[in-house]
Amino acid sequence: MDSNSISEPKSNGVKKGGARIIVDDNDEALSPTDLSEMLAEGTKESHDRAENCQFVKDFLRGRIIRDVFKVGTVALYFVYSAMEEEIEKNKDHPHIAPIYFPVELHRREALARDLEHFYGADWESQISLSAGTKPYVNRIHEVGEADPVLLVAHSYTRYMGDLSGGQILKKVAQRALKLPASGEGLNFYQFEGITSHRGFKQLYRSRMNELELDLEAKQRIVNESNRAFGFNMMVFSELEEIGNTSKEEVQEDGFGHGHAELIQEGDFNKCPYYAAKMAANGYPTYAFQLAKTLVGHLPCQVALAAWVAIFAGFTAWYLL
Image 1 (cartoon, rainbow, N blue to C red):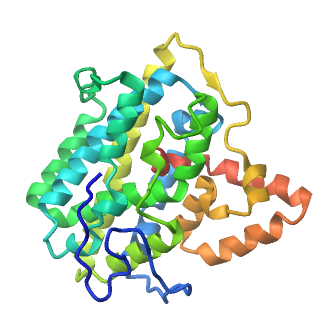
Image 2 (cartoon, helix red, strand yellow):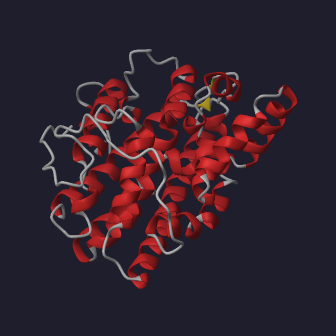
């Protein structure tokens, strides 16, 4: 991972080296024309389409095929390599510089460590860009070269999703694939430069909302984010096909995503179902209070678990 320090403008809440995030605990007053709000509202249909993704549903149930997980990690490696290459090229662009956080966010090196775990020291000679991932990678390079402002959409769609649901997905994969508790094979989910996921997401959304963009440019970013969802779904479909033809036995986690575990821990922001739905609707504080009330009663816990299951597809954003 890039170890270079980030230059620190006065309003930057990131300390040098990326180890500490300082934000106001109170949510800022948001406008419907703020980019973060437009993205949340404008990508709802993409979340809806994700509901029918069998790959996502199986993953969350802990039904994971090791070879498919490995291929999925390869896909992530190529996507993030392309995205971070273009972000690096455009790091001084006025619409990229405010959201340029290589220490905190970049995933390429973490994914390389995961691939070494799964494939061995010569992993680079064993992987290749798949047909399902190639259009995604090509599009990232295209916008990085010709229209860098659209990198905002790809960065937001990927990184914010990873921060919202990554820890739960890590636990599901770790149990189902019987991966070491020390984290080998799951470095992708570890953001070592961020001490508060919630705080960093607040900072990132604030930075996006401060970008000098007119409504037309903001709408183009929303459209590109929806396009990014589409590319992700192409990759999911490819992984699902690989799983359907694989002779490898499914690695059953048993219970998959443990809602009861989340309820006991009280950390609802780590739940990918919950985080995705609330992010899509733009009411994080209200949703947290509602969930907190519901889980105080056993019958409501059951109802809540059933409710979040309906929105399992929303987690597509967090899986790839």
